[in-house]
Length: 248
Image (cartoon, rainbow, N blue to C red; front, side, top):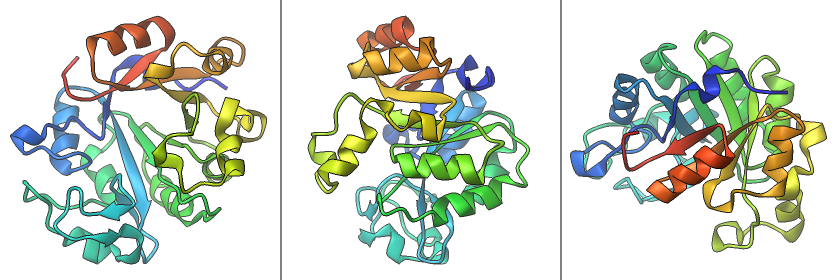
């Protein structure tokens, strides 16, 4: 169940090689182009639009990066592409736009963002787009159901689970206890059958990713590496890093 060697061959630029001080915004074309120029793999996030398009953006709610506010899922792809972003003239891409821009030059690590509602329309659209894309690309998600959807709808593409040691922080407050528990210890692994695990670097080392890597042959990525100490940690306990804030 191990991922292809190209996944771990080069560091993975988190949301592209962005630098807001230079006007290069995460998940935007400039961040993608800068990562390609550095020959780094690229991690991006995708969200579902109101009309079923896979859009490249991290947050469920608009406003942190955009002038507009409100739930992303309530806007169409056309509306999202027309949004004004703070500190840049760039515009939000669809997954199809991203694939056209990258054109197979570096690997894509695509995180499927989830509302944990068992809605599979986003993975369905992702499968449609990647069916005509020849470049190296993998999918991953925190949500085990979305990873299962990746297994069922994109069986030819490597898939991974994004994980951490616990899910008690505020980010996960809207989930039920059962939903949080379902993500612990990769207990869904025999069903989802991931090829790799992306684990929070500050939680390494930990028994679960160690077993996934050493007993089941999963590649192990550490996220998100920002400091020298984190870089040392991921080098000791994982196969590659997902990084931001510096150039390796």
